[in-house]
Amino acid sequence: MAGEFDLISKYFANQQLKRSDVALSQGDDCALLQAPENTHIAVSTDSLIAGTHFLEHANPQWVGHKALASNISDLAAMGAEPAWVSMAITLPSADETWLEGFCEGFFELANAHDLQLIGGDTTRGPLGITLTVQGFIPQGLALLRSGAKVGDKILVSGCLGDSHAGLEVILDPSKRERAHASELERRHYCASSKVALGMMLRGKASSCIDISDGLVSDIQHIMQRSNVGAQIHCDKLPLSAELIEFTQDKHLAQQYALKSGEEYELCFTLPQHLLESVRQSAQQHNVMITEIGEITDSNTLHLFDNGQALEDDVAGFDHFRS
Image (tube, rainbow, N blue to C red; front, side, top):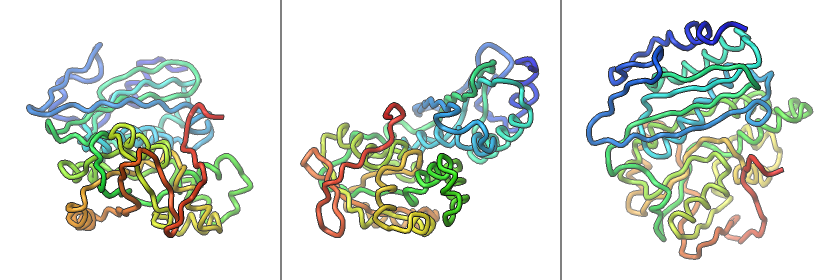
């Protein structure tokens, strides 16, 4: 296996992007950074492990994108602007073909967000990637889970359920024959960033979370932090045409949309009087948002379909649930 410093120098140290707020990055024991005045630094850490978050034979470019996209999504949910990222990666061997593909996907997304890799660690071991990403947000403008109020509208970005369908394709080769299987697999790995939407929601959204564990699970995180209830209208869930064709059953597609993890779309709440202005801003930024429900005072989650209450128990994604 090539030495640790050889790998760092060849694949990670020569990133072209250099931010002015990075005084010192890779090469010493620590990075030296300078944050703007009157800002908070938002910090998030995520791990992706082969066999849990991706298969070892997965397209390494997609893995690189997914590794960073999952962290950037946390910044988007807080309304933060990405700035710096550090990486700890373990590799069974110095597979340079894999590393080239991984770095291509990783740095393409990083450069699109002016996000500089500032350091980290490489070592031999089971394939896994841990990233810590940091971003800026003006003091007092962070989007939290704790601000939802009774009467607020619940909205989501994008379409939901595609990631779950893509995961089914990955885990069950027989489903590769279904319509749009390859595209849904790609969408599972290559979520689009919602940073622009998160920044747009500063001072407007009363709460926000990224959909990483499934809509049903994540809206309940907002409910618990805000001490409120919620109702979701399943007939309003945004579903892609590809998902509906893949499942051949719109109600099944709705189930996917409710429970699909690793979507990395945003779920947020808005006061009624801000709904139209946010819709107009989203349209101007070519961002799709959909109203799917409202916040209630019941402290419970209720699901409806065309006005009829549903009793189904739809669980979200849990890494430790069998």
